[in-house]
Image (cartoon, rainbow, N blue to C red; front, side):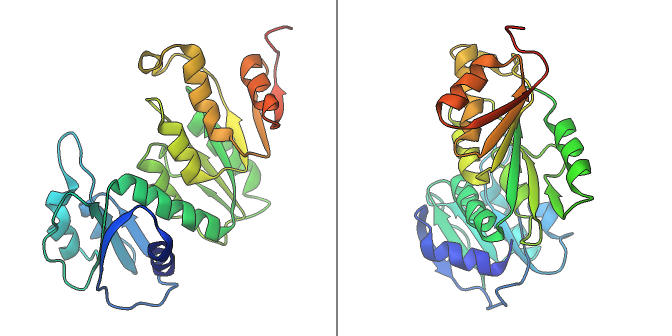
Amino acid sequence: MTVGAWKAWLESASTVHAVTAASVPMPSGTPLFITQDSRALEAAKPGARAFVALPGNWHDGHAFLEEAHANGARYFLVSASVQPPDLPESDVVRCADPIAAWQSLTRQWRDACGTSIIAITGSNGKTTVKEWLLQLIAPRTLAFGSPRSYNSQVGVPLALSEMTPHHAWGVVEAGISHPGEMARLADCIGPNVGVLTHLGEAHLENFADADALRDEKLTLFNGCDWVAMPGYLDAAAQELRAQGITVHTWGESEHD
């Protein structure tokens, strides 16, 4: 991510409620480190720093705005329902949903990078497949991989903010627990190619049935050029092919 990407997003963002733009001007190519953890700011590499204030089960990020500022943050995403403290020489963006705003910012950066992205989802095996693909791609061209298992609503934008226009390919995980989450991740990632590793019962308790869970995961692949998956997932393959998406399978099908 860069300062220029932040400024460009501000000019076009529809999720923004109000902006106080008072940051010290910096070259547009200045790297922008963005995080929801105020503690991570202090150890960030040289460059600009941004903080996303998120509510949580145990802590509210808005309680750490001044700490984030003291640790070098000069770009902030905060909830429109909160009146932030005085944060000198900072861009303070108030929005209805800071996570949605962060994901919107990330999608604009992803498009600006022009990187082709492989998105991986499934009940298990996401990180292993990601590492395998990176091993295959890396000798041929510069590739980006999401760190560790960064695949959540926060983890995906956190990961993609580290991608650069120099990366020809990116390999990103996407994980969900509840209905509606995958559409947000798909919008954030904008994948060109998809991989479905497996469909199991993880998080099934949050969905009406196994078909609903399958359909949620398949949402990630809307707009993909092609998708790879195990041959035994016939129903999933048929659903994607009905949308005009090319599907490649490996292994035996349910009918073999």
